[in-house]
Length: 245
Ligand SMILES: Nc1ncnc2c1ncn2[C@@H]1O[C@H](COP(=O)(O)OP(=O)(O)O)[C@@H](O)[C@H]1O
Ligand SMILES: [Mg+2]
Image (cartoon, rainbow, N blue to C red; front, side):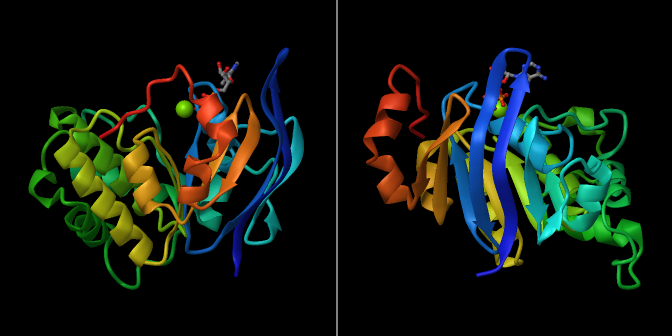
């Protein structure tokens, strides 16, 4: 097993609040890893730390063996780790194609293999099912299409590791099915995926392994079946509405 990411005793404090406490985990290359937990558990903060947007208070992040703790988001992205945003915010006054090209310019350079940036962006839009909207303004897209555009922008950076933050949230059951299929296709391209998700059926179906955060602590780590039956996990979710779709 090749290790894509190593989180070594990550602690993050915001003033008096410990958003993450001593989180240690290794993510295997090629896996789909689900990251779940109640609201406020620290999931998005963990992604921000991996992606170089937030520094941990204590602890280290290693990507493919490089200690990237304290690196800029741009540098981490160039190394191959890219994240989507929980709140999607495309450039509304740019077209769909232009939005993807912005993503490409942010990521790894010199890997186009002779193709133009526009050809590359067009291929990615076809892959995510947005080719028919390439010349539309991003502001004109539906939520499901904006989520796909967010994935396309991330793919344009040519990631080895893709961090997906609630890309199924707000979608209809049919749109969720299609998005789940897209995630499978992304993994089939050899991209390691870590996904934060509240849609339990989807995350349990997709994941090789599930990590559970609660109040900033890792309370479970294992196969979907093991995690779903963990008493600590069931306890952590009491009172929280879990999407059934
Ligand atoms: N920039 C910040 N400043 C202060 N507190 C924050 C900041 N970002 C997150 N938090 C707090 O850290 C905790 C974890 O937040 P977050 O990582 O967004 O949780 P999740 O994504 O699991 O819902 C929450 O209590 C949140 O209010
Ligand atoms: Mg979040």
